[in-house]
Length: 271
Ligand SMILES: [Zn+2]
Image (tube, rainbow, N blue to C red; front, side, top):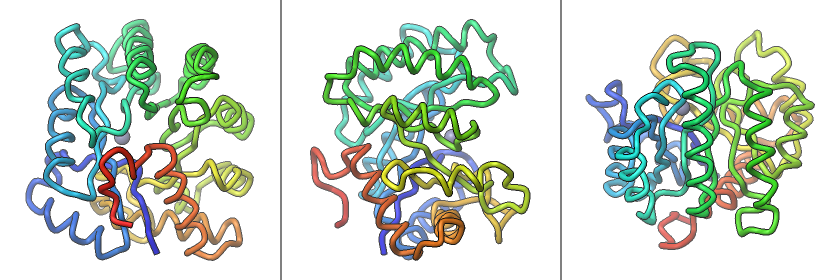
């Protein structure tokens, strides 16, 4: 059995005391890869360091919509440099967050657009954060996707992480060439429409993630989240779909490998 945690924040201070043990527990739980995600300049740098230090860790670099106001040309230049490392498999997390509005919305939209353009040039998929900004996110993604239809990124444009839209949006995103990633909330008693969505999604477009240290799944809700707990998310989705856990684990792992090309270019994925 192999699992991939497609979205973790291993750089965060909550892991400072026991990061090594956290990664070891992930390995023991069957994980073969963890994508650790940058949210600003410093955490992107740290994500790449962690991916260099630990064989099973890969990195994504980018500026989160919360920090959009920090995306100046200096930062973008450093992100560009970082992204040349082979262990950087995506640009992210980027997107729009109209729930917390920690950066002005027009600033968020500009930062999102700039990083989408850069990802296309770089030829790497994007990891999208969308909170209460579905219409604007989809508008930008549709526009971005159109000229990429014949590029090597076609069909693997990126992932909408901790997907929170409706089924119609899920279908539209898949049509554009995106994957959808599901995290801890699917295990909650009030999972709402997420239940219908995970049942309906095509198996070859589904990823699992923890978003740790946040969004801890049951039965550990209330504690710190960590990559090993991606197992509980996977188990819940398998149960909802009436599938064997191993079958869903294999499918989501193959999807992550395909989207992020985890076996290329340096073949580090422990097969
Ligand atoms: Zn995140």
